[in-house]
Image (cartoon, rainbow, N blue to C red; front, side, top):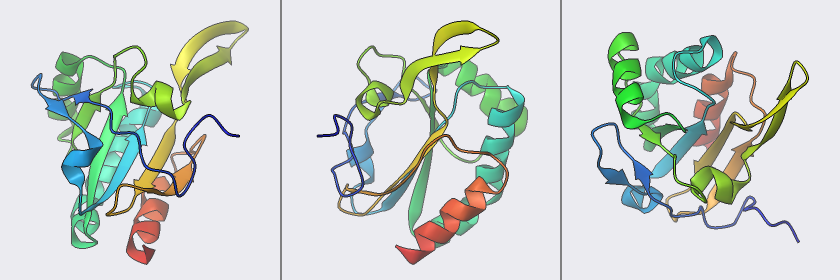
Length: 157
């Protein structure tokens, strides 16, 4: 049996921290489609591009009945600066807690780069249906064209 949630399973309802220090949970979006995109780090080239791509399509996601939520381990204050610097429209949240949402999904994991092993976020996106169940998972996302692909899946749901 897979230890991590799969398509058709309920999306884990674990709290995240908003940039203003509040708390948000996936269940806060009940009755709407929800796109949760996990990315490694604010203000890095790929993560900035991904956030800008989702920002560019934010109105289309809203028209399709979907909320967006970008998640990384960055602290709330860093998210505030990232949002302001790039005028981001997709809400961001911090998943800094040990045993948090990215741990529950199995995407906070050991990674390797230039022979160095470290813990990091696997760039992943989850489409959650109106009932809180996982409708689609994209793992090890390549940024180019990803937001548009997710939008098409939202429209088809």
